[in-house]
Length: 132
Image 1: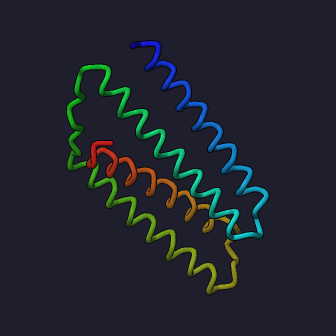
Image 2: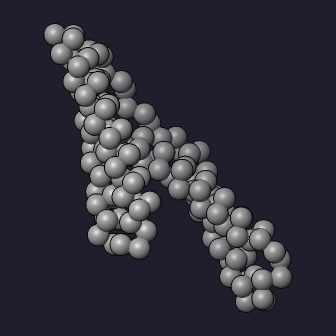
């Protein structure tokens, strides 16, 4: 029983790696072809479905349930502050564009950093909220 489960996990892992490699090749070689890039994105999503299904099946065989993570009020507050920071970085970027890009690359880097932080934080909050 355990060997068939390990074999299924190994095959799933190999298929995930092959899908990721196929997706990377499609996206790299299909830079100017929408259809090939779309196939690459579908391969990425297929790999993500395999990852999600393999994680669910491995949790079911462990025999214990994790309690759902609760989202604390300070986490919502940090998310709100990050959205305000993102809006301020966007305003700075627009102001810099209106004045002829005299500030250098700092507004662009601030906007990229704020976007990354905000998306990672809100992604983590929604993952906890949806119990992924």
